[in-house]
Amino acid sequence: MARIVTMGEIMLRLSTPNNEKFIQADEFDINYGGGEANVAVSLANYGHDAEFVSALPKNPIGDAAIATLRKYNVGTKHISRSGERVGIYFLETGSAMRASNVVYDRANSSISTAKADEFDFDEIFKDADWFHFTGITPAVSDSAAKLTEEALKAAKKAGVTVSVDLNFRKKLWSSEKAKRIMTNFMQYVDVCIGNEEDAEKVLGFKPGNTDVTAGELELNGYVDIFNQMCDQFKFKYVISSLRESFSASNNDWSACIMDGATREFYHSKKYHITPIVDRVGGGDSFAAGLICGLCDKKDFKLALEFAVAASALKHTIPGDFNLVTREDVEGLAGGDGSGRVQR
Image (tube, rainbow, N blue to C red; front, side):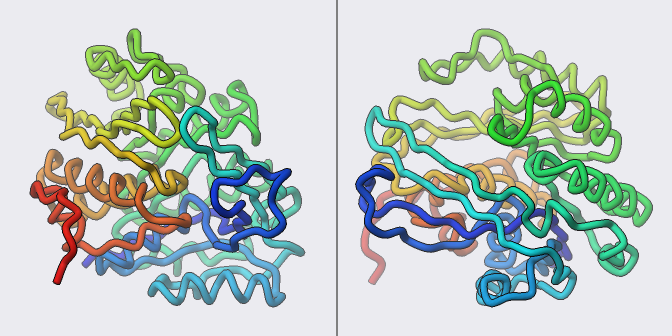
C-alpha cells in the first residue's frame, strides 16, 4: 500500500438536525471534517498509510479532533500543537429546491497562523508516495499559503507525486487572489482535480456551454480546457467531477479525466443520487478514490470509475467522512447499486 500525506485544516462541524434552518435549531450535531482530513480518512479506510499534517491547539477540542482521526487509522504524529483555536463551520443542510448553507468561523485558527518551521518536511515526506492538498488551505490566510508552498517545494524535492483539488471557496478569498496564488502552485502539481467552477475561478478556464444550475453538461468543453491545462501546466492527469444539480436532494454524478501524455479523454458511468443524505465531503471522497485507484496502479479509467462510485456512496452517509470500504466501492463500480440488505 502507498504512503500518502495530506495537509490542511480539520474543523469542528456544527450542523442543524433534520434539515432545520439555523433559526429553527435548538441544538447542533457535532462532527469533525475538512477537505484534506476527509481524503486521509478515506484512504486509510482503503488500507493505505495515510498521514494528516496540520496545526491544532493544545486543548481538549484539539485533542478530540486528533482522536477522531486516530479512530479511523489516520497518522497524526506530524500535527503541530500550536495556535489558539480549532476552526468551526456551521452547516444548514438543504432539501429539494432549498440549498445548503455554510457559515465559517475559522479566523485565526491554528492552521491559519502556523509557520513552516513548525514542520519537519524532510521527515514528513520521507518514503512518501503521494502528497495531496486543496485550494482551501492557502485561502485561509497568507501564512497558510506560504506554508502550503513550502510543503509543495519539499514534496517535489523528495520526488513525491502531488495532487491538488482546486476547491474554490468564495467565502474565503476572491477569484483574483486564487488565480494569482494557485497558478503559481501548479508548477508543483502532477494531478489536478476540480469541477467546472474551480477551473474557471481558480485557473481561468471555462468549459464550453456547461451550466451546472441547469443540469446541462457539454463534454466537448471539458476536452478543450483539459487540453489547455495540460499544455500550460504539463499535468499527468486532469480530472473534473460532474455534478448535474436538479435540486439539493437530487443530483446526477459522474466525472471525466484526460491523460496528459496521450490526451485520451474518458467520461465515467453516471449515478443518479436521490435522496441525498449529505453531499458535504463528496468532492473529497472523489479525490480520495482517484488517488487510491492511481496508487493501486489501476488503469486511469478504472481509477476514475472507483472514484465516482466512492463519491456516489458518500452522498448516502452523514458527516464529512466517507466511511465505506473497498468492497463497498468495488461492488457499486461493478454494477451492484441495488441497495439490498446484506445478510
